Amino acid sequence: ARLVVLVSGSGSNLQALLDASADPAYGARVVAVGADRDAIAGLDRAAAVGVPTFVASLKSYATRDDWDAALTAQVAEHKPDLVVSAGFLKLVGERFLAEFGGRYVNTHNALLPAFPGIHGPRDALAYGVKIAGATLFFVDAGVDTGPIIAQVGVPVLDDDTEAVLTERIKVAERAQLVDYIGRLVREGWTIQDRKVRIP
Ligand code: GRF
Image (cartoon, rainbow, N blue to C red; front, top):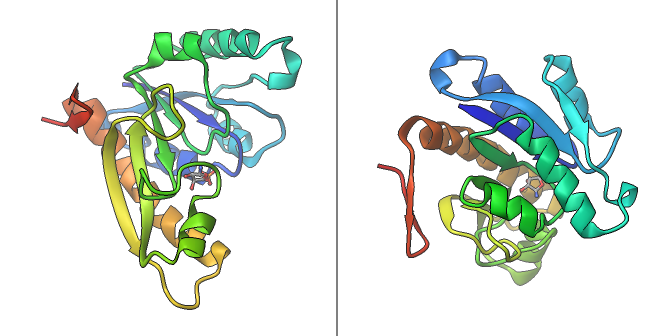
């Protein structure tokens, strides 16, 4: 299966997918990596293993719709079976969801529906929860609201800082991402009444 991965930052989740897909038995390979900005480690990680990259920067387009159309076209060029947002910090638009909805997955560093948005670990820490974690889900038109594929919990420890908790979550998050992307592409899935089932 063909994966297009979208990134905005360090790309450690992307790296985990690149590493996993080195084994043909994994069932998926990363055919392209896209970003909404230049000069990020995620793009370097792709280039380092010869995976093509593209950048669709919001500020290069007159409107958000134009940007969304350009991103959609760039992703479509690579004919993905699944599109993976791995730390991609932009909300995609209607065009993108019309094309890739139902096969666009995102990994979020909190246990949804708690703590959506860009500060999951910080918000979890501030709330005082004792279990934090990561959620893999199919993206819909809302912010971090789509059907949940998988979740993994990690403990919140008394002395945690935001940085320490964020890193503990990311370790579990990467393993979950690799595991479930593999399952989805090898086994398929159904979504009924928001419930995702992998047969
Ligand atoms: C992940 O923890 C994701 O949940 C959050 O940003 C992080 C991306 O990390 N939105 P990386 O770029 O894959 O290292």
